[in-house]
Image (tube, rainbow, N blue to C red; front, side, top):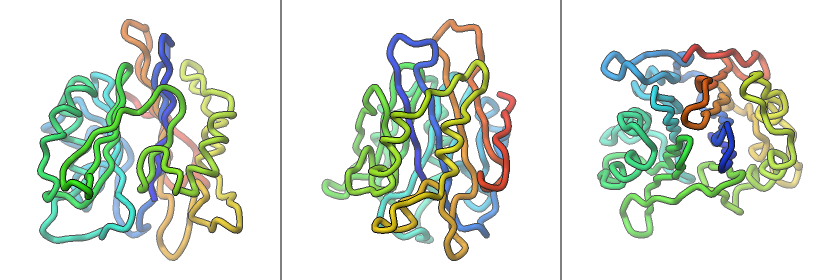
Length: 248
């Protein structure tokens, strides 16, 4: 169960901070964030070698996109396109609003059900397959702290959200200028869970060849701030490796 944590702040030098864990089969090959797509020379992100897309990436305009599976959906259907392509499609736009407006017209039958986070320093959305009506729907991510999992945005049914969103809210806020995300790093690599909720309610999981394979931290500055976006990522499981700055 992949997870994206978002902090949105109005009238702040750093209006967008994101932490993300990718949970996947350990055998599925991937590459660390880089400029992996020649046709998208301004996009940097992790490469899913099997599908050709990405689970999380950033473009030069400061737009971040991340895709998550939906709950209780098959991981493989041969007639469907890779959900990782959606990240690249979103980053073919200069801002999050344009991306969301364009992607709402996707054919929902072309992909397995998904949640797609698209955000920049002004707007943030979750674009998702809505099985109730058979279309693509959009929800704005509110100002403040939010968590997106396979259950959706701030879903009360999600035990990981129940256990960890309050901890992110009370944790010291990262300092992107100093690249100081240590408190969020600790939470992203936490395998602590309430026994009654089960181990998949932890932020970091490791079970039967499936688990957290990498973590990322990103921060986007306000327009005009003389500082580039900050992108940190682990080259391996976050409990086995350090967060390394990605050259954006």
